[in-house]
Length: 366
Image (cartoon, rainbow, N blue to C red; front, side, top):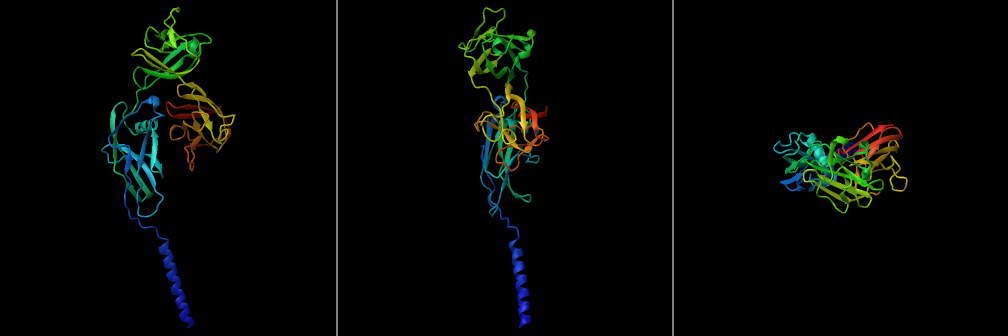
């Protein structure tokens, strides 16, 4: 009897072991619906413009994929030239969510590196790959979009004069190209405390004068007036001292000015002063249109992100926007919900330049 009991126990053990092996097998893939891109709509046409490229964005959204069992699905947004069947697909984003927004600046940068030409319409295709492992993927139907990238680079013009910093070519204020011919823009502090007059130059040199009221015949008369008492055709700034966005068209002879705040840039996180806005905060100095610089005290292995104001919103810039950086100094903060960087170098003071024209952060040792 005891012998039969032992045989029974052995058979029972094998049965349980086999059952456990069955339970530990991978779930059976029984694919259902592939993801479907909801937006943008197929046939959308977008013209990217350099001047607002970091503020404008394209939102991509899609439906949930069905693999036949509950899964932690990752969605990869891919792009390629239309008609290439995604043979050279480039991944734009990877997320577990059902949508992602990408700025025009980031798209322009990535598509240019993918070989697209600027200043002409190009048809491209997007699709979403849903994957639960390298072996199992579902793909959406492609969505077509026609994009016109910006690539033209026009040299800046300059303002020199008492009300914009002084009659000194070394203090010339750069007015940068918008990316369109004859159009220029900057934000600058106009201050008539030490004099009213200024005019425009093609280079920071006395022999490169473009002119003033003789060339620009349309201008805000509540802010500017001809300096008729000067030997040169300067403007006098007669508005309230402060920061202004100034838009110049050298072809139409037009100047537009709008009062605004001084452009700010802050580094916030435990790599700097901490995750908060109590003084002292870590601020950079505005030096030119969409460029800031300054010395920053960093803490090694801390995280940080850039902000356009002394608050959490509306403007925030991380590795999703500022795509050009030296990975010897900073790198993506994996595991963070926000697009932060980790600071990798030893703790200390470093010089930082943030350039939102080129979506670059440069960090160098002092």
